[in-house]
Length: 265
Image (cartoon, rainbow, N blue to C red; front, side, top):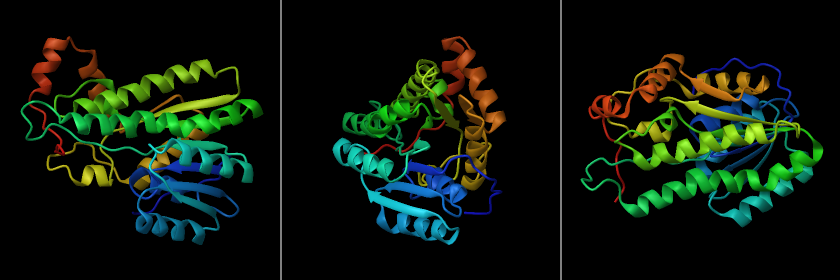
């Protein structure tokens, strides 16, 4: 996955969903260090164990679970048990999926849309639900929600994905303000195209493409500063922000030429 520049972190116990690949795996490796506790959640055992091996080589204490984030009960059980071992300092709700309208004239298959919202939105709620009360009770902690630059504006090639990430973005921004007096920080992460299993299936050009280790480094440094919104790469963020600021009619003309992500029938 390439090299990354590590630095001392204030977080001693980090829990990450979607930790077996992409940004989740890169973040686990970034935070792995002597005595650091990692609670890693994913669905693919083989990929997850590869990440575990790399983290343990760095001296990290690693606990894992094979859980789909839509499984509210089992996810809560694992996270509460993890928090009892050592209070979770940083919770990263990273797990997500991506699909689009490619080859489907009527938009997206509705089963696909519902599944995407279950993972990308409900899965985020399932992740933070067990840990947030514990953090507010202690009066400290950090929560990071994985959104996307796609959450700034609806793109015709991926309606459900954009909508799900917009929901996570706005919820996280609102939650940050709501928890400002509780000692719990909330950060919304909005990446552009980053090396992952999601982007690996894209058959179109991905401007400002970034490696997962570099993305993890940017995210980790920003979380150390408790930044509310973590958007990168910068040029992609500016382009996205400008398109989102345009009148809808003009934005629709520009976006009409953008490619569609692959649909899953």
